[in-house]
Image (cartoon, rainbow, N blue to C red; front, side, top):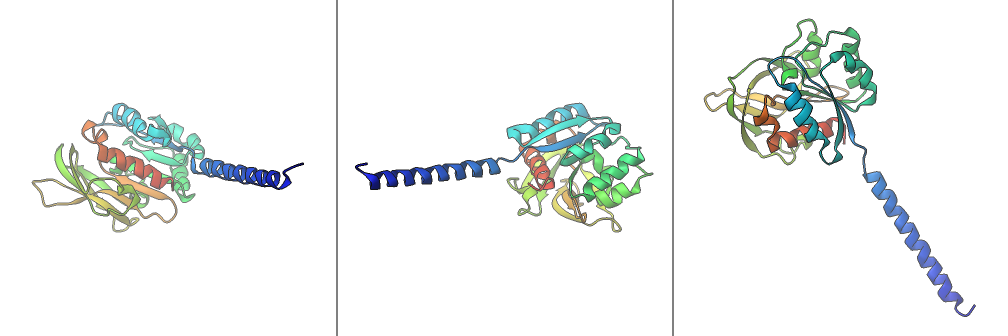
Length: 246
């Protein structure tokens, strides 16, 4: 062989390039996370759940492959689906009557999984299930302003859920009179809502400081004026990512 040193150098260079390509490929593979598996539960009164949750919110969450979302308005299906999801997204104000399902929701959060509670799910809906509001919601709402315009102000701009959200934005919605429960799980307020004709300020976006799983409360969401605006969409996507620990 006339050029042994040259051949050795070429072979060595080939090995280095191959190793670098493999490392890059492995890095890309590891950075491509699987979509977050979400179960969105709707159904009940006073809201068009099919239009704004089943259609609009599902589309928002599935954009760019962030999540795969299954929607149901049948609470009896929740129990069987919990083992296969990362985040449970409750927007329903119809009762979850089954005791086994109620216990399974608590067990799901106790296992470190994510829970997003939106608009109707922040209401005091079930007198026979006080643990839901006290422990998972950290309080609740028993009333709201007449549907109309109000301002939402981000109070914690450094939290991952508020990343990319304007410091203040206006929308038409039902301003929920959410009140924390002094005996319940503490909350960390991320955004507040205030009507122009009132001095009262209420939590609009918050984290329930549950000891194990991640819980987000999001009071907005009556109709198109909330579900179709960019601040709402960004918050919803951020909330699901944070709840899923992504």
